[in-house]
Image (spheres, rainbow, N blue to C red):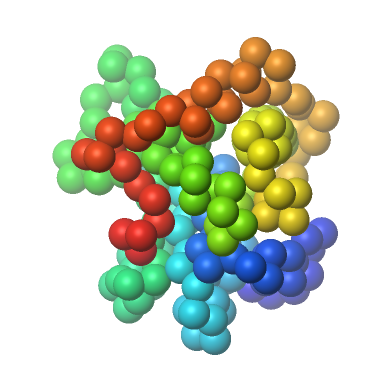
Length: 188
């Protein structure tokens, strides 16, 4: 993590956070990798990264992220979310182990609302303003404390979610998660 840009991730994390969930699109993954590497060296918190990409071929830093996950299996995990794979016309590449769909559609289904509202989970959103604004508004409407959600927007700054999209997101976040699909962060 080479320098301070808008909200330096490490300096913005809520003091009460035990688990940091980072959600990015595209190049937002780079700063998250740098943050996660530093957190693994000096911190004790769990870090989970969800990186959103259009196509499997767009995934960056896969080797570095996989290495960090092997090095710190108790505290770090990451997942690629491929938006083109939500469409059945796009076959899933052999060996692909990531998530299918946009991060705004997939990740909320994997998060437990009680963990989000506990004050012990911090969300950092980075990348496309459409994604950042949509998720930030949904987490706020759910009732997450403002200091537990930080953001960095690289483009599409003004793109906002509709009230219906925010309402749908809150419904997804509040819905019980099937145990087979549950992801609470405890796995990291």
